[in-house]
Amino acid sequence: MVEVVIDSIRVSLMSQHRIVILKDVDSERFLPIWIGQSEAEAITVALQEIPIVRPLTHDLLRNVLRDLGAEVVRVNIVELKNEIFFARIALRVNGRDLEIDSRPSDALALAVRVHVPIFVAEDVMREAASEPSSEVEAEEPPAEGDQRLDVFKDFVESLDLDDMDSGESDSDN
Image 1 (cartoon, helix red, strand yellow):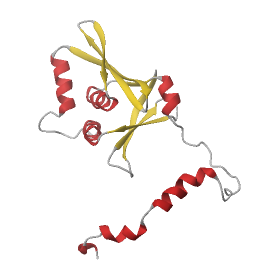
Image 2 (cartoon, rainbow, N blue to C red; image 1 turned 135 degrees about the horizontal axis):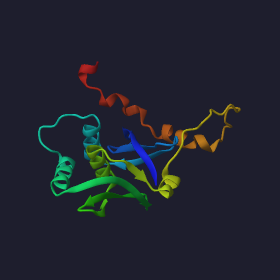
Image 3 (cartoon, helix red, strand yellow; image 1 turned 180 degrees about the vertical axis):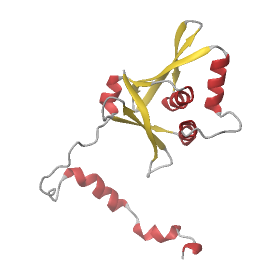
Image 4 (cartoon, one colour; image 1 turned 60 degrees about the horizontal axis):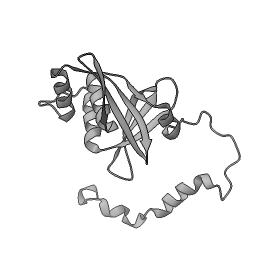
């Protein structure tokens, strides 16, 4: 298992989804996981220690576990199957170790509330994590048909620039 920390939460420019970026504590590997808006807000509230008047869902879970005598030991992201991540919340209850199935987003929201380590299975990291380029290539400019740029070319060509002004309100003029 690889220990990670929450590096950031980002907003997808193409949808309303959020992406939590987990960073390997021992290297420059980053693991992006798509999460829902509510879970992103729950993680952000806890990370930024924003005071809340009433418990949110993940605060409720923390309180229930605590009051039942369960200790959250760690959160493990254990599998990636069909582009879906699977997590397990490791608990200790009355000297017994248990693991509870969870969505990664809920497990992460709980982890930041109870301040426990987060781990990712090495095979998940190998499959889905990436490292930033360590050096900028000092090569010749890409050839006209360079396939690495095709994705950007396709994106730019898909933009409807005629609609750019339609989103402005009268107060913007």
